[in-house]
Length: 381
View (cartoon, one colour):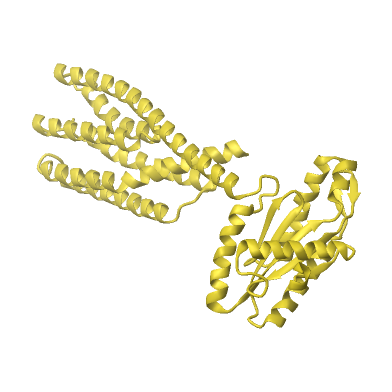
């Protein structure tokens, strides 16, 4: 599953790079079509020439609109990425066929200088397509094949030695161009892979620095950052906040009897339950071992109402954490003790709030465990 998503990510990046150059490619395509149509206006039937020009401009317009839409509404799902890529290749195919038609028309009754002009334009378009679409080699292969093969067939069938020699040269040109496309494709793909891997490594390093490896909860460093921000917001708005220091009762006994693997499993489940008990604006962090901190924000400005809100949340946490845990085949039940420190009354810094909440938590353990204790300064004395 991970490898599949990685493939989709790489393909999405490649498609995005093609879309970046798509507009310039279509503009060049359109300008060359206009110049060629003007120069061939007396050499080819007007009806055929204007029909070709109209079809070419219409296809370019459709490809431009589709490319703009895809660039504006990016998608990372496999079905969308590969579906859009198929549509993009179909547009390249349609455009290539129209230019291939030029290669056939120039060998009807067109004069030599007009034929050379058309060959010059087709060679330039194929070279541009190789550069623009090599990141998706199939688009590049489709483009140069549709553009050049009809002209090469016309050269071989003309019976003219010069054109036959040009046909041989053109065939070699396609072969070497295909090899160059493959080489450019591999280099560009490798660059994208390295770029994605660098981003993934940076994300992994950031996660190790700010998140707990076992539970994926924020660690102490990230909690300090969030609490500093919360204290600033609280001082400015008057909204209150609180720190809940939570410790699992008799956790050492679980590790000693059932093993550390079971203890880790309990901590994972406990962290999920804690997250289910708090609001989106709150934060749950693991300090280490069986110690967790819950930071509550946006509480009522009135201290007593805010305290009531905290008590309600704590009761819900205690009730939820008391439910049995499924540890593989074992069913285990435990309790937790919680100490509370309110912003302002019980501290204005991370260290002070955490220390006072920790003190209140130990008072809860002394009082019988599975309890909530609000910090008071008498606890210090």
